[in-house]
Length: 193
Ligand code: ADP
Image (cartoon, rainbow, N blue to C red; front, side):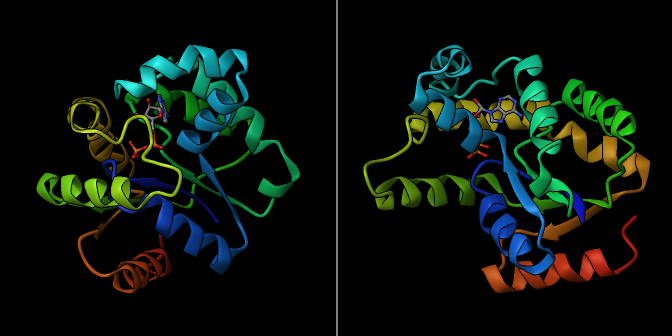
C-alpha cells in the first residue's frame, strides 16, 4: 500500500499512519518526525530547518524531497509507505510524481482527513499539554496560527490536485479514532487506485 495522508496539523495523520502501518505492514514516512530528528541530531539539515519549523513555516522543498526520495529507497519501504506531512505544496507534489515515476512506483490513494480549524486548535493545545518532556517547539499559539495559514494557502490546494487525478478519498477526521480508521479502510477498499 502506497498512500498519502493529507490534512491540516492536528488532523490525526500520525495516529492513523501508525494504525495503517500495523494493518498493511507498510512504513510511516513523517517528514515532520524526520526533520525533528535532524534538529535533535544537529545535522546540516537540522540546522537549516530548526528556526523555520519553530515559526511554523515550510522548510525548503528540495530538502524534504531529497529526504523522502532517499527514504523510499530503504528496504522497509518495499512493502509500501504512508506519506505523512509530505507533499505539503504543489511543487512537492509534482516532484513526488516525477520521483515515483522514476522509481517505477505509483500511489494507491490519497486520503484526506478533514477537520475544522477550531477543533485543530484545541487538539494541539491538548497535545502540547500532554507531551512528555514538554511541548514541541511549534506547538504554541503563534506557530500554530502560522501552520494553519500555511496549510490553507499551500497544502489545501493538493485536495484539488489529487481530486483531478481521481485518487483522492476524503474522510471525516473529526470522528473517534476507530471510526476514522474504519472510514479509511472502507475508502481504501472501495477501489482506490
Ligand atoms: P503538523 O502536521 O502538526 O504541522 P509536522 O510534524 O508534519 O506537523 O511538521 C512540522 C513542521 O515540519 C512543519 O511546520 C514544517 O516546518 C516542517 N515540515 C514537515 N514536513 C514538511 C514538508 N513536506 N515540507 C516543508 N516543511 C515540512
